[in-house]
Amino acid sequence: MKTVFISRPMPADVETEARQHFDVTMRASNAPLSQTEMVEALEGYDAVLPTLGDRFSAEVFAKATPRAVMLANFGVGYNHIDVDAAKAKGLIVSNTPGAVTDATADTAMTLMLMSARRAGEGERMVRAGRWDGWHPTQMLGMHLSGKTVGIVGMGRIGQAIARRCHFGFGMKVAYFTRSPKDLDFDATPFDDLPKLAAAVDVLVLAVPGGAGTRHLVDADVLAAMQPHAHLINIARGDVVDEEALISALQNGSIGGAGLDVYAQEPDVPAALVALENVVLLPHLGTAALEVRTDMGLMALRNLRAVLIDGQDAPNAVWF
Ligand SMILES: NC(=O)c1ccc[n+]([C@@H]2O[C@H](COP(=O)([O-])OP(=O)(O)OC[C@H]3O[C@@H](n4cnc5c(N)ncnc54)[C@H](O)[C@@H]3O)[C@@H](O)[C@H]2O)c1
Ligand SMILES: O=C(O)[C@H](O)CO
Image 1 (tube, rainbow, N blue to C red):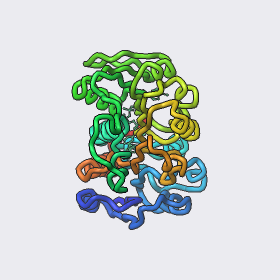
Image 2: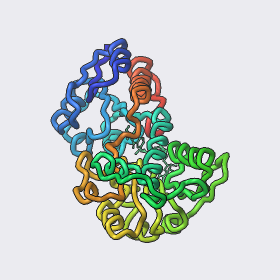
Image 3: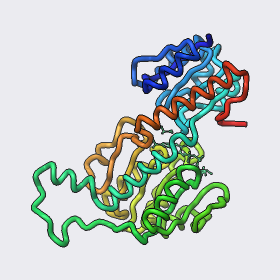
């Protein structure tokens, strides 16, 4: 049997399926792998099933003489893996596209509603015993129906968010993305991000992380947003300049923000935690048992294709 190292405890169905096909070592800890652990995993097993937080950097690959032929990432985002360095050492990298799409789009809608309708702030008020009863002008937020959402990154998740906004909430959709999209609903393309930011009531980030999108939303993009507008980030933390976002929230140059991801997870800047006009979720995008099970089973299908059937990985991240 081929040996597979799984870097975190997995949902039960994923573990069962994995043990049916492979000689599995499933690490008991939920902490990110250390460099030493990553090198040992690459050298000691036929394949590794890592997840976000396990930073397979060029340095790690440089230190390893891999026996492993594959990294089957648990998750669609793989910005924690230096894929060029992996490829140079002969490894295939796969991910789990599609399995995460609806759940992550739902999380974007959760953040959008919570931020626009001040749900986090309201809940904190009730829990603190500070609610003095309903009145006509209490805690007035932004009504989403009829407003315009701007999607940054109109890929699988971006489109799932756009559909929810368009068909579910009667919102207008505008977007900025890398390559033209053929969409089956009305949406206005923008070729300039600050112009999109200026035109919308909610700006939603759904691009991949990594060097190409680091600080895509910087102080200029935030300054272009309207004072009532909300920023929603379900992508990766470093897509936004967090310091610039904190300033924009502190000085009220944007209406609010809803964040699922942070630049240095799990550290969330104290200045963000102190603010009322930001909703903070702990990277919950795919956090549902069915979804995490589908992600694991998809990663295993990729491992089986390569290690057992001698085929290409169906979800290799390059071609
Ligand atoms: N919060 C979570 O739990 C969670 C869950 C799943 C995915 N994600 C993140 O969401 C990302 C998107 O996932 P997906 O499945 O929709 O990927 P995808 O590849 O289908 O979509 C990404 C889109 O972004 C566009 N894009 C890339 N670079 C761009 C740039 N510089 N400017 C504008 N557009 C750009 C691409 O053309 C593509 O359309 C993942 O890479 C991951 O980082 C987060
Ligand atoms: O990229 C992903 O799939 C998420 O961030 C982890 O679920």
